[in-house]
Image 1 (cartoon, rainbow, N blue to C red):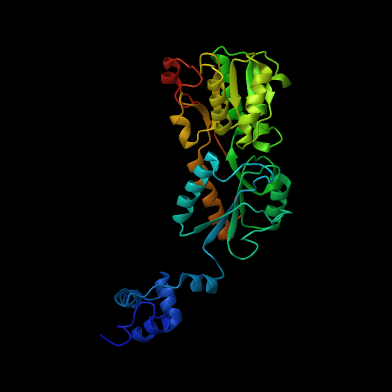
Image 2 (cartoon, rainbow, N blue to C red):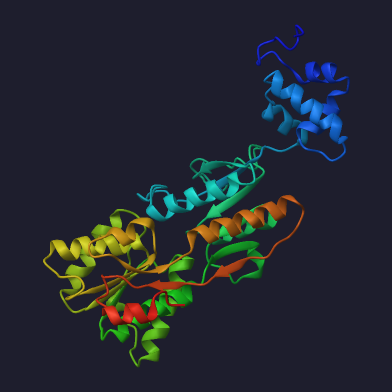
Length: 355
C-alpha cells in the first residue's frame, strides 16, 4: 500500500485522490458528485480509491464552492409575548414531516422563530447565507410581512391561508371547507348551541369560522358573538376557554375548536367541571395531531394532511431551487369521526373520512 493510501482518513484530501487516479481535482469532484461528464471507468476507479482510503467528502467545502448550503430554514413566526412554542403539537408533527421530506433530497433543516422583521431579535438564516430557502409554518399576524418577504425573495414557501395572488407560493388546507364540515356534522347530531373557540384575527382561523358560520346559516341558525370565544394558540388558551365556559354556564351543547390543542384544553376543563363528553357537550377539533386519537374520549377532528403538506412544500421549494416558479395549492380537509362528538357507530362506519 502506498504511503498516501496509508494515511488516516482525516489526512486524505481530494488532491491525494486525484494524484492516485492520475486526474485533476475537478474530475475527482465531478466523479464523487455522480456527474455524467466523467467517463464511467474513471468514475468507478475514483470511487474505489475513495472507498479504500476511507476518504470523506468535505460537504461544507463542496457546498461553499457550489454556492449552496444544502439547508432549508423552517421559520415559525411565533408571536412575542405569548406562551406559544414550537412544542405545540401541530408544529412538532409538521417539523417531523418536513425533516423527513427534505432529507430525501439530502437537505438539512434549520429551525428558527426570529423573522427578519422582528423588532426584538431580527434574523433570517436565508438572508444571512446560512440556508438556501425558507419555509414559513403559519402566518400568524404577519401575513403581510410574509407576503412582502416572498415577493422580495424567490425561494420562499408558506404554510397558511391562501387565495391571494400576491403572496407567492402558499400551501395549506381548505379551512373554510373544514370549518363547514365540523359544524355541519355537529348540527347533524342534533346540536344547536355550538360554541366556536379560536382567534379570528388569524387568517386560517378566520377561514374556519367562515365555514362554521356557513354551516349554521345553511341550517337556519344565525351565528352570534355570544357563542364565539377568543382562544389563542398557547397554554393560556386553556384559561381563556375556562373563563368563556364559565360565562356561558351550560348554554351550549357542542364546541368546535379551531385547533386540537384548544379542543383538548376545553375537554380537560369541561371534565374537571363535571361535564360528560360527549353526552353533555360534543367536541370537534381541527388538525388531527398525533395525540388526538389517544385522548379520552378520542377527539373528533378535521384533518390537515400534515405529511402531504410537508411533502408538497418540499417539492415546491426544490422546484424553486431549480429556477421554477411553482404556484400555491390548497389540500382538502377531512372530518375524522371519533368518540368526542357522540356520533353513533353506524354513522362512523358509513361515512369514515368525510370530504
